[in-house]
Amino acid sequence: MTAERLRFENPSTIAPPIGYSHVAIVPSGPLVFVAGQVALDARGNVVGPGDYRAQAEQVFRNLGSALAAAGATFADVVKLTYYLLDVSHLPEIREVRNRFVNVENPPTSTAVQVSRLFRPEFLIEIDAVASRPPG
Image (cartoon, rainbow, N blue to C red; front, side):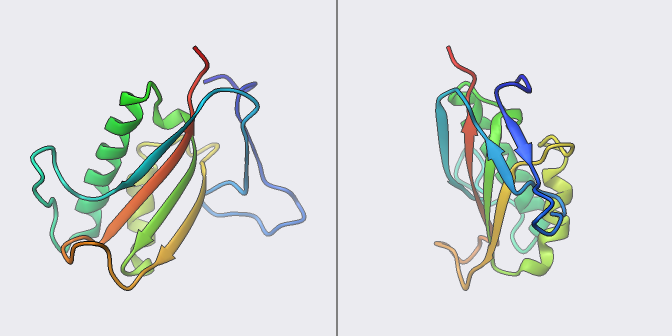
């Protein structure tokens, strides 16, 4: 991805973000929307029951596979939305995320604590928006 195609901003009039960007500017390229991913492996088995870190690892692998199918990578991600049963686990999820995204210009993000996800085994779900290079 080229810097001309995607720009991240953090206005001085907003409190500085920690681990994400406030604004992603996407001047060109098709948008890719990735549905919320959970900790299921390719066979549909739950990975890491009760373990936020293990589930985050699988979720990010699934996001990577979905992005690749659309011709995109984590470098193209402009927005992540996290749905967690317990937001106190966000630091360990960010540690996993940091191995996948550009931490110099991290994507915009939203983290929401929810009372439950669609199956009781799931602790986390993440969806993504990316801007794929044109062509």
